[in-house]
Amino acid sequence: MRVRRGAGWTVAAVLATVAALTRMGAGGTAQHRGDPAVESRILAETIEAFETRWAEDPGNPVIGAGLIDRHLMMFRLDDDLAHLDRAESIAARLAPLSLDGAGAHARLSAARLARHDFSGAWSSAEAAVGVDERSASALGAMFDAALATGRYQRAEEARVALERHHQGTLSQRVRTARWFDATGDSERAVAMLGDLCDRLAGRAVRRQTVAWCEGLLAGMELGTAGASAARRRFARVLDIQPGYMAGIEGLADLAYAGGDRERALRLYREILSDTHPDLYLRVAEIERALGNDSAARAAESRFLRLATGPDAERLNAHPLAIHLAGDPRTRDEALAVIERDLERRPSVETWEVAAWVRLQRGELDEALAASDASRGWGTATATGDYIRGRILLRLGRVEEGERLVTAASARRAELAHHVLLEIGV
Image 1 (cartoon, one colour):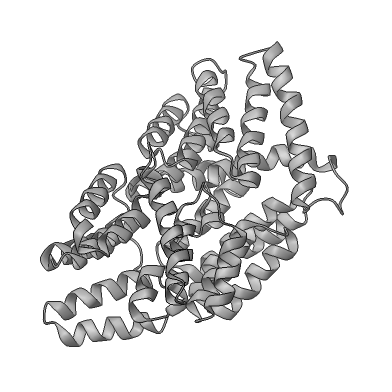
Image 2 (cartoon, rainbow, N blue to C red):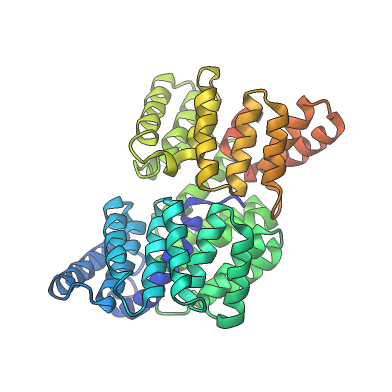
């Protein structure tokens, strides 16, 4: 379940905007759709108009919902956290007042999940279901929050309820595809999502929404059809939405995995953003490999400043723990970071990072237990297999360990950066 940034961006937040964007379809000519500058200007003008109406009629659920959706979409365009702040503020005000209480709580959950406030997102999702246990928005928020926080049984229950009460809707089908991918039926997930992306492309929605769908599909295809198919899909994302971050990041990841460091570095530099500090860490890794120690130290220092600031840890716990685990002097800190994140979200991905941190610390029994936990639901990732193989080798289970490491190393395009760094890409 390797999740790329653009592809993994909160499904609830994206789908909450689809209806609004469909209504906005006439807000720009076809040739302008896909131009980030034009889309940003149109959305900014629309937000300004909604803010004026909200000031005149605060608490109006229709105006508030539209304003939340557009702030969430603007965040996807410019990465400015102020839009998440505003969306969350409006959603928090609407939740106890709105006639559509389930929808208001669901939007609040989406805004909180986008900023990795996992406990807040989960609480809001529970509140949404508490208002209306059959609401599509409430069940969708429950699925998203449960999947993100490692409550997989609850995610499955929400998915089944969505299928029972809202079968055939866009949100239900996207979440079903994500569930198939997460639990190992990736070919079925790709087929379902491919059909959905084609349908979206034929609707009067912004190109960015289609690009989001294609980016999610590219991440799934990487595991089913390989790096070449994923590369073509990410290129298609950029044809649909020039400059789209998920497309550029996907191509950069593939270039890095393929050993083309210079191309990867150029692409990562195109999308460097303080909102996503892990990108500085990737740049630092490549600069160091290229012998540019000064540039590497500068990028690494910026990552650490951003990833360890107030409230920053919950956004960056995984790359921060992995980075700290690489230095014997900071491995205690790495363990503390990942243990705090396990309290927030005991997900497959978090347990996988915990296994890596324990391995770096030489705590092999604890590392194996964390690997077991990461494989307790769904299918193992290439990164998870590699980490487990390394643990088993250290424990003397050589044949089993070598088999896992060899098979995982052959899937290098799917491996996380810290693993690629270890095997010498």
